[in-house]
Structures are given as structure tokens and as C-alpha cells.
Image (cartoon, rainbow, N blue to C red; front, side):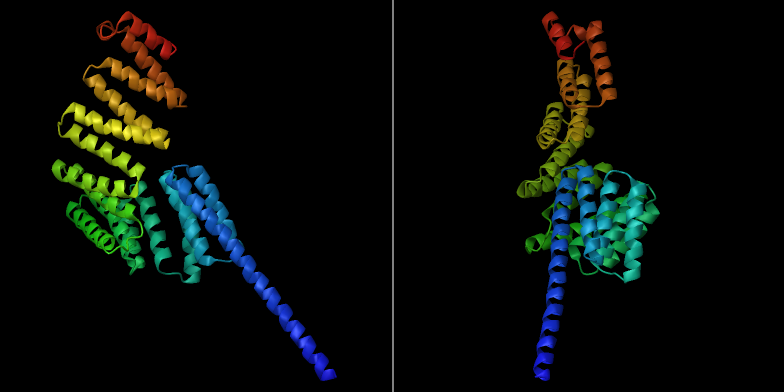
Length: 351
């Protein structure tokens, strides 16, 4: 009888331990699921340039990874936060998060893709700070740490090429850009490219490289390749950036004004559709400047009105009002308007 009781008690204890263990596993999975959900939202807001919300969600991700004791998740999220602050040009904040990630990774002897991403972001921080030698050092480390991850290596080479170009090493810059492009094209043709935007990014980087070296025909060729890929992936932000680049190529190379304006206006309209108002304002100001050079003052005022209607920047509003007032008060420029048009513009600009 004693043996039977002992067996029953033993079974109950084992079942109890198993239940507790299962509960811990379930709760850990729940926490990690919440972390992944927050990261997904953070990535989405980052892509849509809502950086404050992106950071809020990344902080949520960090909390759940800490609670579930997921070290790699913690390192990755700290790096995501550093990356977000890099994009905002807040390099001091970026460095704080990246250094925290580095300390944890050193204690845990972390290697591989997480370390590659971390050093890549360190490279970006130093690039923004214009410390190009340290940027090159960290991009090179990223390439080493990415090891067999060919797509990530290619993205790091694109970043490395930018830093090399800034140091005047055009040959090494071009070499890295082509190596990155070839790798990404190979992955794309093999249907194993994870992010098609990386391929369009490599074309854009080459287009920008040749724009800087004033080889405008090559620059345009690669920008058009980027457009092809961005159309496939429906990357509207990439398309807006590429059409703006075509406008700049056409403008700087002395191309037809109407063609230049066509590209800029396509870029502007896409940015407006995306509600990327800072970019919309930047491109619209470029358009207004071109119309002013061609003495089309009606189109100057129309484009300045577009800006006035979307900006919340009081200083910019004041600058626009002063400019419009000056144009309408200028005897030579006001000759381009009828009296009713002047009255209409004064009403629209609240003069």
C-alpha cells in the first residue's frame, strides 16, 4: 500500500512540474509573439517615415524580448532602435542603443547576422557623423560578420561604397557597387532574393555614383533599371526618389525644361499620395525655382501655394508670404498677371 501511495505522489509531482514547465513555455511564446507583432508594426512605421511611432513599437518589442529572456531578440531590437535614430540623424541616441547591443553581444559571444547588422548600423552612424574611416572600418566588419548571408553582404558593400566615395577612392567605390549589384541580380534570377528593394537600391546607388562623376548617360541607365524593379515591387517611395533623380540628371546635363519638370512633378505627386510632406515640399520648391528661372511667375505662385497648404512650419509660411508679396509688388513681374489674377492670388495667400 505504501508503495502504491508513493507511486501516486511521484506521478502527481511529475505532472505538476510538467504543467509548470508547459505554462512557462506557453507564456514565453506569448511574449515572443507580442515582440514580433510590435517589431512588424515598428518596421511598417519606419518604412512610412513615422519615426516616433516606429520607436514606440520597437520599445514594446524590446520589453517583450527582455521579459522572455530572448538575448538575440534584445540585441536585434537595440540595433533597430539605433537604426531608427540614425535615419532621424540623431546619432548620439543611435550610438547609445548600438553600444548597449554591442555590450550584450560581447557577453553572450554572439556572431553571425545579428552582429553584421549591428556593425552595419555603427557604420551608418559614423557615416552620418562624416567619420568616414570609422564608417569604412565598421562596414568592413559587417561584411565579415554577415559571412554566408550574400544579400546582407551586398547591402553592406553598397554602404561601404558610399563611404569610400567620400574618401575619394572612386575605383574601390565603383567595384563594391558592381559586386553588390551582381550578387543581388544573381539572387533575384534564382528567386531567392528576400528583399527586391535591395536590388533597386543597388541600381539607384550606381545611378547616384555616375551622377556624381557626371557620367549622366550611365546614371540615367541605372536609375531607369531601379524604376523597373520599383514598379514590380510597387515601391512608391523608391519611384518618387528615382523620378526626382531623373529630373536632376536632366536639369544638370542641360536637358529640356519641360522634360525636367515632368520628372519632378511625377516625383512630387507620388510623395503627395504617400503623405510624405517633407519630400513633397522639397520637390515642389525645386519646381517653383525652375519656373522662376523661366519667368513663369504664375506657376511659381501655384507651386508656392501647394507648399503653403501642407506645411505647418511657421517660418516657411512666413518666407513664402514674403516671396509672394515681393513678386506681386514687382512692376516687371506683376505684368505677367491680370488685375483679377492679382486679386485672386492675394485672396489665396491671405495677403
